[in-house]
Length: 429
Image 1 (cartoon, rainbow, N blue to C red):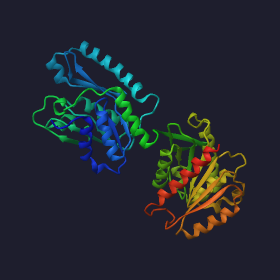
Image 2: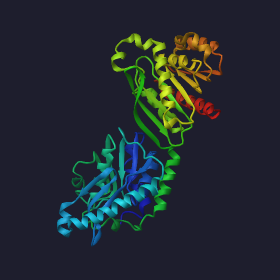
Image 3: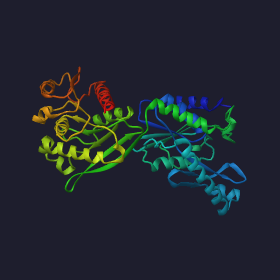
Image 4: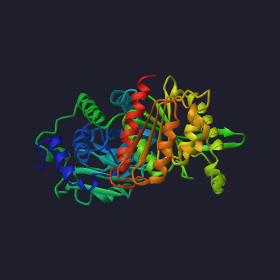
């Protein structure tokens, strides 16, 4: 016997996964028994936890023996060898599938309710169960996760039979097991306590980790019409229960893929704020550097993107704000200075407010200017700009930081300042 219970198994498994600490990992537990194991792993890695809904297709006369599995999104895995050896016909298989499809729907409602699932696109996903026997359920889970856009899949279990990785057919990029015994009859033989996990425990595990990691964020790729025949690509991220949405205006020709702005956006999302990262220029336009400094063009597109966002159901009743970087900050201030602008708050990171010209004096939204202490020229420009602002404003200097805030802790300080500014002023709306 290797484990006292699933909590003990989760802790032992987490010790084998310590190399993932600090990485962008999402932990998915397979309900029901895999969730308490996954919760211990998520705790140890300080990672978000969600479920991967998969149902084993048990042989009618021997339900613990898997002849296949079903997963979310229509994923279906069938073990032809087990079907043949157990003598299961098409009618019996169909009856089991119908029952398990209904159970999948029931569990989705029971465990998730109205909450969206944690986004997996482009991320490392750690799939966890309380053990692996035939591998059918794990195989289906890996396929579900791959279909949802995971960049890398790691399947981790406390115990599995020797040679278990061959059963996965390469569906997982990495596999981890604490024990791989030669004599393997059933997963329960390796646990002192292997009683069935109740639904209430699954929900409690999910709620506990969710509370520690902030709200679930729904990410959506969007296309934003801004001019005749011009549509811009963007990424809209809205946390559950969002209290406002911030539009990002990138500077110096950077795009929605800017690592610095994505880092700040992630911090805002964790604080319950939505974000819209989008390109102010098309790829063809970005080739011409003159467009990068065309503040009226960029401000006009930001204003039209704001109108587009205001008409979406995700933003209904929510205040909107601008986060501008470098030349994008000039566009944000220019747009905020429009008489018809209803933007609730503005934050500038290493901005060029001088490019906003006489629009500075027209800005009504509370404005925070954040500049690196070693970014001497831009710091001087921001000091002059603050004297021209007629709205509530503040200049924050991040000591030791240069223009790109690449120094250790500098960007994190920017994110904290922006989060505090937006949450405080959105609350006043």
